[in-house]
Amino acid sequence: MNFDQTLSIKFVSADELSDLRRKALRNNDATSHVRDPRDDEAGSLHLGGYLGHQLVACASFYEGAAPFSTNLTSWQMRFVGVHPSFQLQGHGSVLLQGAEGHLLELEVEQIWANARDSALGFYQHLGWTEIPGSQHRSPPPLNLPHTVIYKVIKPRGRQS
Image (cartoon, rainbow, N blue to C red; front, top):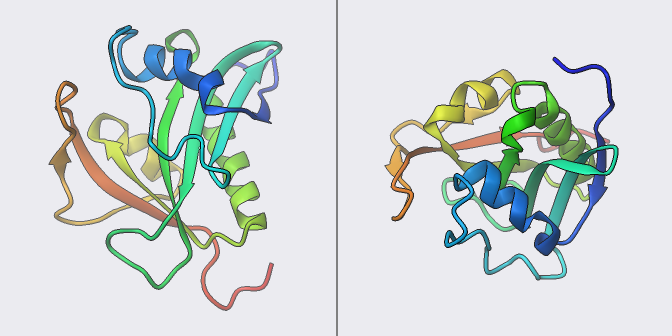
């Protein structure tokens, strides 16, 4: 882990995350798609993790029901990534923990995502749960194995 610098978390626009999304999640392919149709909606939440002035981690969140459960207030998480030069140093964990705190303030009860299978261990370590039988492949050109995951961050009836 890198303890030399503290990751600061900032609210940013989706456009500010495009380059990092491409580097961290699309093998720096300049032709790859790194936008969600909801990126510019007023309620969307985009977080950047910075070491000094350098953006090294990103995650985006979109309000909407989970496809497997509609009884909790849910937001979808997408485009979670850490710059390749800064991976495995704890920055992704710090960013997601900060995001959870903010989502709790918005009274979100559950976060869900289509996680790359190669990252499932990371999410499990942070308390996420896999939906059994939800394994699928992402659309081309990525065509990577994914699994639907979720994390309840505020169970019903729990007071803040």
